[in-house]
Image 1 (cartoon, helix red, strand yellow):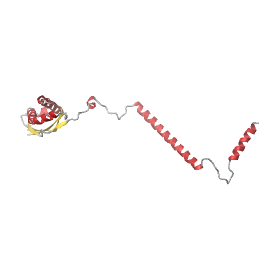
Image 2 (cartoon, one colour):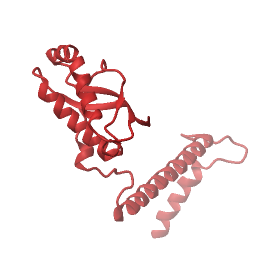
Image 3 (spheres, helix red, strand yellow):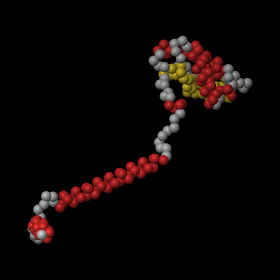
Image 4 (cartoon, one colour):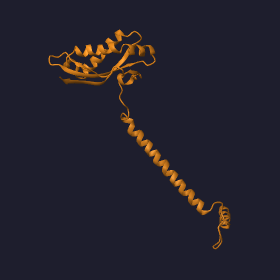
Length: 185
């Protein structure tokens, strides 16, 4: 009885097989099957490669610090304000307070909040007074007190304090030197 069951299946399968010389008729042609097979292989390969790359990158980044991070300190985190610059003082020349006189050549620019129109007007009106502050400061110092980055920063701060003491409409927030030179006389 069990043999009869398997014999019936063989007849059905055999009935569908094509005879030699006959054209095979099917739902999908052989070309379409080949295309789908290659698309499946390529898709499987792409999925495998992406998985390997993701796992590898995650494994490598797990133990160490990323090198694209930039260490930041408080100095770098604070954003520098955008200032307007008072440039009408121009280049100033004079002599330092040394025994052997040295000529200084400076070109200061004063940074201030540009929204303060009253301060802009005051800086223009006090231009001659500002020039006098710079000449008094540099003329009263020796070259040793003015040269070098630390002394330059100190000079900027001292001059900023002196200028802010005379201003009534606001204050300057920075001084930048376009030129800062000392030449032997």
